[in-house]
Image (cartoon, rainbow, N blue to C red; front, side, top):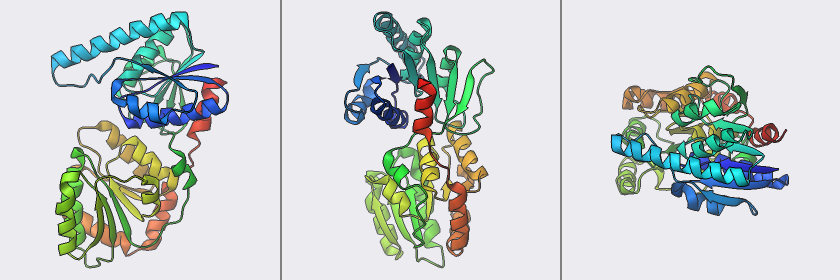
Amino acid sequence: MKIWIATGGTGGHVFPALSVADELVRRGHHITISCDGRVREMVANGRPSGAKMSHVWASGVGAKSRLNQIWALFKIGVSAVALSLRFMVARPDRVVAFGGYASVPAVFAAHLWHVPTFLHEQNAAIGRANKFAMRWVKTLMTSFPSVSGIPNSTTRVVYTGLPVRRDFLNAAGAALPSGNKLLITGGSLGAQILDDVVPTAVAAMKNKKIFITHQTRPENVARLQKFYAENKIRANVLSFIHDMAGAIVGSDLVIGRSGASTVVELQTIGRPAIFVPLGINPDQAANAASFAKNGGGFAVEQSKFTTKWLTATLSELFDNPLRLEKMAQKALVPNNAVPLICDEITK
């Protein structure tokens, strides 16, 4: 079967697409992966052997400038025409889109030529690009059991989960290290509040027998190292974590933003978390709420993520390891997303 996988924009869209592509190639299907220039190198390095690549001209439409929005829509329109012509000559048997505006041209072209099309929504609240593309899709696959914002339509909704890399699957259900180990997943400009609140909250704790792995932006590494050292807090501060699955396995608690990939990776391994959703992103708020609903952790609005609150919360959790273990058990969600998605699109 010839299957076209459309992805792009960010790694959060690309990595699930590559995991599915790998399994489909293993099952003997012929795969083409389309993406935009922002992730071309990521796809080229991560695609399975034998999978082809195709470039689409696209970018996000969320820019504040009206002119940039018009330009982004123009690029998507040109790519939609180009793929429509390509599908007329070499039509795939299935199209699978993993969200983002870079996937819209393939969805439109598939609709034009009546190719069965599947759309995957990462977040617990449907994104703008997917909401727009749903008019041309018969099946929507979701990462979370409940997704808000899905427009009333004839689209079939199937809960599959979100594909994660194999190193996370291999670590599923790993026991807590029970070593008072705290992981902070910052590293982006939007995660500055974690750098501001977490160190001062830990410094205010009476029990400082905590070992912290703190991912932050490169320009903040030296400042945080100095703060932790002056306050006699054991910490490893770094700008990038190469083995994120290993870092999560080696932690008793995680604090971070609540992008879909982060949430599902913690669910796959089974780790309690404190999520602070990015205020301007309703998707993250929905993801965090879904995680907290199961009892695996906390979803905290940024305005309420204060030093006083975090000091009290961390003290209570690390003084009660049995509670952390129960939270880890509640956080654990078996991840069978790759086979479920592959079965769905090939049946």
